[in-house]
Image 1: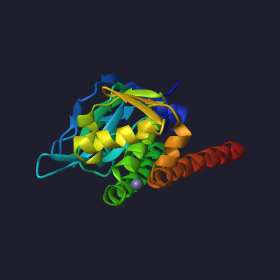
Image 2: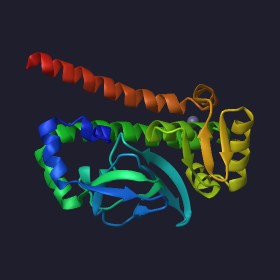
Image 3: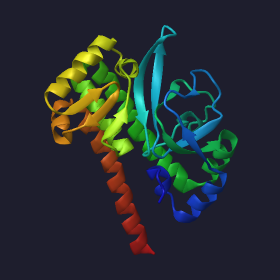
Amino acid sequence: MIENSLLAAVPRDEYRRLLAALEPVGLTFGEVLYEPGEVIRHVYFPGTSLISLLTLADGHLALEVGLIGREGMVGIPLVLGHAVSPVRALVQGTGTALRMESAQFREEFLRSPPLQLELYRYIHTLMAQISQTAACNRFHVVEMRLARWLLMTHDRVKSDQFHMTHEFLSHMLGVRRVGVTKAAQALQRRGLISYSRGDISILDRVGLEAAACDCYEVVKDMHDGARAARATRRMRDSVAA
Ligand SMILES: [Zn+2]
């Protein structure tokens, strides 16, 4: 069972070759993988871990602009020929990942058209996620954004329970802690989540979808569309073969 769906979409013989260069690692909540302006040493294919991309303003204000889990890869600048990260990559969900040293990744990337194709598709959906997040942060209220963020996390960790402090959430959403508290209490009063000392449980997934802004569906439809296109292509290839 391949945990990372991007790797799972690469043909088996290609995957086996990649696997020789991939190292299993455990990532821990709060760990920083990249800082802005730093050289990227490894790329990461998350399994059960969850990585947040944060943009900094004034050197200390951090705001989440992207969320990467099992559907993607951390280290996209390397795909585009850049060795330096423009963002902070912060582990926000403890779990598994496979990592590859950057120089080796560049070699594998250049010689594997199937890997290139999967990464280009992923970059497209990640760009959609990042641009939708920019609009979301500007136009939508904290409660809707928190609901959206919880759904995005839920999709990736595949568990109804996860741990997240108020402080972390305030960085994710770019609001003060009191704003996070109010939004979490409102969702809790509606019976959608329970929230206690950073332990979050999703109680009503459908209700939470109704409470989130449309940004959630917009980005998810794009991910699902990419997945459907992949399945169609595979079916066509198998007919051709
Ligand atoms: Zn929104």
